Image 1: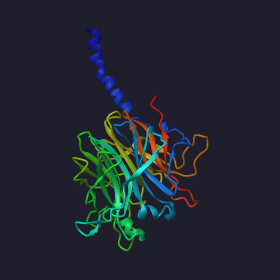
Image 2: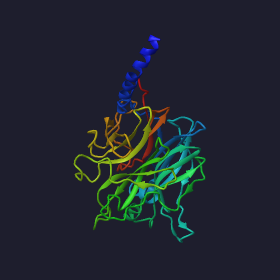
Image 3: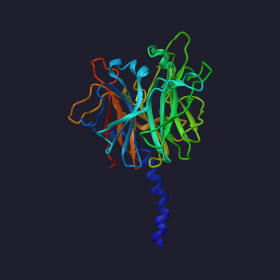
Image 4: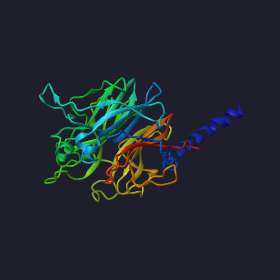
Length: 365
């Protein structure tokens, strides 16, 4: 009886202690050097993004952006990108290309005009839920030549399939469009979606946006907003304001980019995000990766240990890369981050073709 009483008395103490430890997620200390074999690319293509999803079949399904290398990295990504699909038996690969998940789809026969995502699909972000794969992405349309036209037509959408190889159901309208008020932070374009299931069964969606600016073809500041929905298909409702802001708003035209988000019941029942720290505002690592945390998905702050990766990264052979990682995406296994996927060698002027890489994450000790 005394033993049982003591156990009940101490239980709250251990629960609190466990919660404090869970809040100390230090992802950066667990990222391992990149093995040379952990790299996925396609001959003749720039490969970008990279959203891995473990399916109920036990396989790892990778959704990624690609476009012919002959068009160059930029503006090739904005004019010629398509989202493709590859599969592997192991999380770090090798991944084998299967098909193009979201190819150009041209004219909507119901309207006689181009679909909102008629020519380009990019920025893959995906998860599996209740027997279906949900593939979030940016789509656009244009004349195949004009970079600002394609870039400013960017909108956020979602495609749904029961099989990762398709067929995919694409919606006639974007799920996150621009705001009509030109003073709004998302009045020119919306892009870079990051989505996850909420514990209440709804969806949290974060998106990048550009503000309209008179006389500027590419617009003004780049910021992030939040939208929520009761189910992955939508409809999505925007929340007021924007997130991932520095303590000196407006000082930089962009401070964060490319977030991946997830909800962790294991680590303090909160949301986490890994994003590119564009100028080193949050982690001190300019061009590196940083981590944010949020209790409700609306109010985000730098995590206790914000630095995930620097502006360069370690290689397994002891050397260091000469470039940064972009488009981070975590593969979560049994509630723990297991691999960091990222895009490498973008915007290089030395002929390098971009690829997707997979960093092992050491298990917690």
